[in-house]
Image (cartoon, rainbow, N blue to C red; front, top):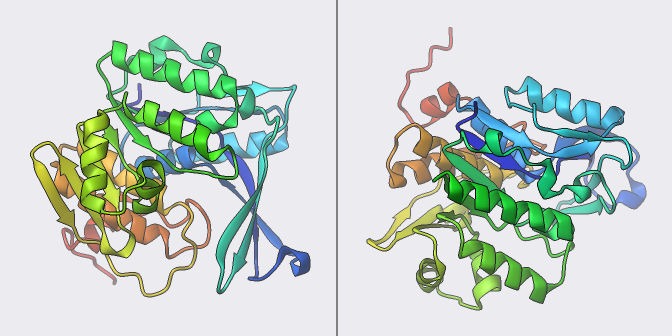
Length: 316
């Protein structure tokens, strides 16, 4: 049974082959993406057993998603196939000056009908970690109930709960988002917000004060992502900067935060201390930035050790 379990929607991504407005783009690459499955794939590549719980349409696109994720070594045995609603869709738009934007076509998707009844208590009870994001509770009231039920089960079985806010302002109202996400944060063990997310949720500009406030809300560990500068690790015992890794050319930023979460959780499962786990997280986030696509840039454990100078590479 998996050491780590995550749950959430994965969609088909239509990724343009060129930069510019979608008005003028006519060639796309079909990929898949969802914060939780991105996390699961990144974790699996590190050699950690991980299960992904979701709902997809009983359609060809759903077949593709499940097949792809299962092929990456992720346990998909608890993915529900729904013949009433379709698999969700996301289209990317990449501008050289504006950056990457996304357009969602996920209203009334199969995953938006996720419900607590779709969770298998026995399956969830075996994991060490439960990973959640702020995307799932934004999709519908039943998805929100599912997240709270998952938290309840994780608490029942003494698991560590890791929460990545992953704020998506296109999915819900700002006031509703703040209320729900802060309530969820009060119930988890580890929270992994970005600096901008911390400012938005708390109305605080100082990164160290942001960490203090999150710790006051409830989690034992806060890792504040600071982009190229790395991250700041915060606990009740103190705070510590963890340097990042310079990336000369950012190809696609989407998926870097999910890789970061996988690096941190992977480090914890493998017995690393908090600082080294954040360092692993920074490294995987850097890898993700260098390749077009949500999951294509995530490294294997061997590649990660080579990058960090812990393993010698033999080229020929």
